[in-house]
Image (cartoon, rainbow, N blue to C red):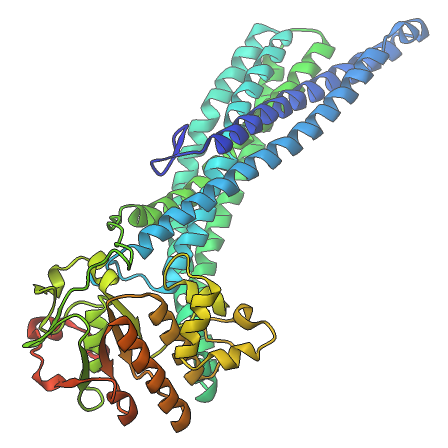
Length: 545
């Protein structure tokens, strides 16, 4: 991170202001700490000598001014440390929030056909854990300048014990950051990399298992899942153990370094006992002030591991924004040899497992093109993701939900959608009465698995979301699955009216007869040529979709 940028992006004026305030507070804290310890050492030594010299010297010794100074420095140190932590963490939280937003935007903008194969857990690990590691870049930064100023203050105070003592302290302080960085690189870089990779793998696997928790319980696989997670967690524990051992060794060596520094300053001091005490405690405090460099060195390996993983996200290209639905002219579709003008309604037929769902996903741009498909007469693999998003709205077979409310799930369709439009779409999807009866209505909370909604209700909510997108083409995969006959008939009637009123085109996949009435023609999946070279490179699970 440069002075004004984080990952190439300008820090906001507010963040820079908090960093400056934190740096000022950290400097006051560092100087106050050194002066407090140094004056305390001088005061105690001078008072002891005065007391040993007799009652006259003891009565003549002025203890009021040093005592008041010590009290003032203690207050300054406490208040400034609080300010430094408050302002540095405020700056870090603001910067991390902005960075998460930018990286998530890059992930969301990627073309699913060519995007990196990041699972939900791996993406979560990068957007949460790796970014948290970068917090040190901001939190520690204000203390680095304060450490240098504090160390310079310590050297200046050590000069009261003689120039040799000051030079000795200066040399030892100058060597400390270089030594710490070399030692930290040797002891912590590899364990930090392993820990970051193991944590990402653990989160990815946990997310995958969480999505299949119902099947895991139903088939009694909990013990096997626990063993698998425990093996990955053991790798993480081993990496963390090595990392913590390295950090502990560096902390111990820092303590030894402080003792050696005090001994060498004492050996080179030439002044009176109170001044020597002043220099000794200033030297120890100066080493403590340089602890910010130690903490930075200890965390550097973690930060570098996070930076490498986040750099992959930052390097992702930003896709051009898709035109708004109202601005996107309807384009034709070509499926196999069939040319479909805007507004056409077609059903894809075929037996289970023949690839109908895969064809819809290819039309929606959510996986590489495996069929002879075109949008606007252009092969779909040459059409931009932004154009595909502007043309099609998919209600998939698995009807995924996001954690939030009903309204949150519907707002995914397009910006600015209001409550009236939501209720209209829910009416077409035959879900409005169910939600009118719910205490919270559109604010009913859902989890990622759909909360209290049944499978059929999740399908209808997914359909309402697709209707709200207002795209020229509606792609429906088993839209009435899980519905009773009466609800199915009502949904087909309302959806047919909506298609007529809006002129929206339809590509439908359904094994039930009732929805097929929405289509005016059909195409057998076996009549759609497949791109065999790409099919052979697909995993077996994808080919069966």
